[in-house]
Image 1 (tube, rainbow, N blue to C red):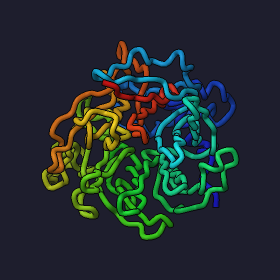
Image 2 (cartoon, rainbow, N blue to C red; image 1 turned 90 degrees about the vertical axis):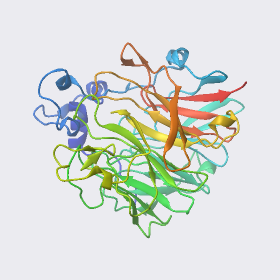
Image 3 (cartoon, helix red, strand yellow; image 1 turned 45 degrees about the vertical axis):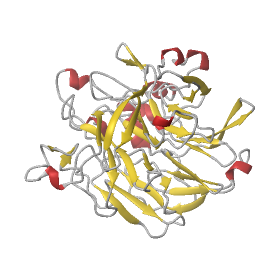
Image 4 (cartoon, rainbow, N blue to C red; image 1 turned 135 degrees about the vertical axis):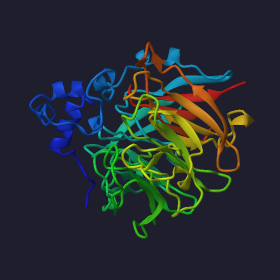
Length: 413
């Protein structure tokens, strides 16, 4: 079997109607993008206000072609003293998730625009970008393990074996699992292999807000051959980033809250799974640990659900996260969590950054602060960080799907 390929025509039309890729739709006039029906309400608009400023909000389209390296907002980026940002790679349309292979290759996924998986090689500071898979259906989730690259679409997970030795002629993918319950809203994945050797995969809610359906709003795990599927956490609306605490192996994940309640509610969250298989994080009944949903929260006590470790901002689009395990950054960052806040689209005031947070050793967060800023100017996005990846040398990569670029953050006293 082969991985899912091009998105269905109706969904492509919905994207165009939702202004996610308006420039692409012009270029593809007459195609599925150009056949959107004006009367169809896109999934992201469910619950949107019918009047006022809120009625004008819509997803922020990424550029349909990558930004040239010389035009990237590098000069605007701000970091703590001693840190430096540089353009590590450009020309990577829709750059999203990142993983580093055993031989140093950095694999990069994409989502709405490109439908590709890239491999970036670095030879003496000269980086080359290669496309190793294309025409995939929302291939956001990737993981590298023992020479193999795992790729997740909403419906399936495939594996490319011995990939670093075959970048110029990638092997035919092996099907790992093809029964994922992934619908278009929040169906795209983030995958990672845990310290238990199992592959963790989420399936988001198939809506903005709705009652639980079997197999949705969960984080699950399976054996690497696709067997033994089991649920790790419930009530998870949409996580597109998680990692495991190097101290105790516990799973931490970011979660995107529901849309259209208000400008400032609810917050996205950072969460810790303390009781695998038992924790329920509240969706769709409670948000951010203490706010009952106006439709589904009647009669629910939010205190009975697993509480978030940290609130990360209203509609923040908190995505990729990693524990810092390198040696380059100062000692205070050892074991800290770096999170990418992609930035809100259904909120008037925009923000986007890399946030750093320090666990308190008790399942919560002791403190947090902005780490990498400068992605917003005059309430418009200059860039939108998606994922972070700690490299073998201790530096950290930050992907920017808005510009199709990857930045490298390093430290020198």
